[in-house]
Length: 266
Image (cartoon, rainbow, N blue to C red; front, side, top):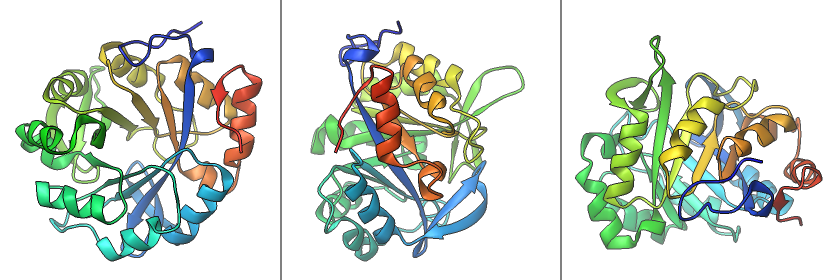
């Protein structure tokens, strides 16, 4: 039986409280679904989907503005407020976070945590400043990872479009030392494919992480959820299969429970 690693992950998988987290890729007023960060397709309204997922029993919600960093603009706070106003679960918000003021605005608009990728890669010291200001539990490192031909994984920025030159495991380790409280690791290769999570990527990150790891990219059949958890993930971020109702949060959780994995049922 896979054992979770780190100070937050000392119990076997069947003793952990696993979180199932819908993830919204937001572009303008719409939720879209990218494949390998490209080929965007509109799948719905962010407020409508957030409300549906809350009612269906989501443990948390992740809201990512996927073009804010690319276009060097801030979050649409009015849209964020409309999405969060009637859901009462933790919400992680990412996209265009560059200053302490940006984080404060996101928190005042309904976020509980912020996910930072591009600006953190370019200015790692910002992680330490943000964690000191708001607490580590509020700061999530978002890594968009792509496997390179020689087998290492590189962190990408600007919505998965730009090389950073950073190897993901060393980058995750540095960010942990700087004070992040959680890692959202997304596989560019698997994103939108429904072929399953990148198990090797999850294993590499969870092996060095004393903080919770959220796996994203490639969720498909229920067995793929279990594979990610056995690789070391503490939570599952899911988009396509929930958006297109190929499975529901309730049915996913029922399956996990049938595999002796502890989840919160509605």
